[in-house]
Amino acid sequence: MSVQQAVFRGFVNPVDPRPAELRAWAYSPDSVPLQTLPPDWDLLVSNDRLIDPLFDLAMDPSCPARRFALHCVYIYAADGIRTSFRAHPRKKLRKLVEIAEEEGDELMVTWAHNTRMLMARQELFEYHEWCEGGLVRSGRRL
Image (cartoon, rainbow, N blue to C red):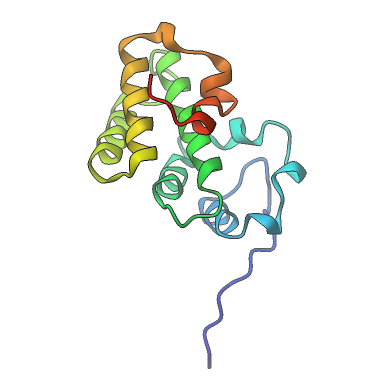
């Protein structure tokens, strides 16, 4: 019996995808193009339940949907910080920042730096930069 790689055929519920579905989609994103997913899907999936797979995908330079995952990690960070950690736990975000600083490449180290800067100075928040992908596209450090 041969083992075949599973083909991603879509989400059971795209508004609330399972972590395994999100991972499978990220390595085959053309199977379900972003423009066919619900509006603001990036905002929907940037939550506590999916942050671990999103972070792992953002840490993986070989992931075809890495930029999308990084974008979601930026949204998660900004959402946590701007709500004084009512939306997401401070401890969780700090742990992700530490992992990115220790194990991440330049993109993830930049995310960690920018997240620390926003923690220190919330006035650095600009919706376009943090929630519409501006920092992901530019790769700049705050």
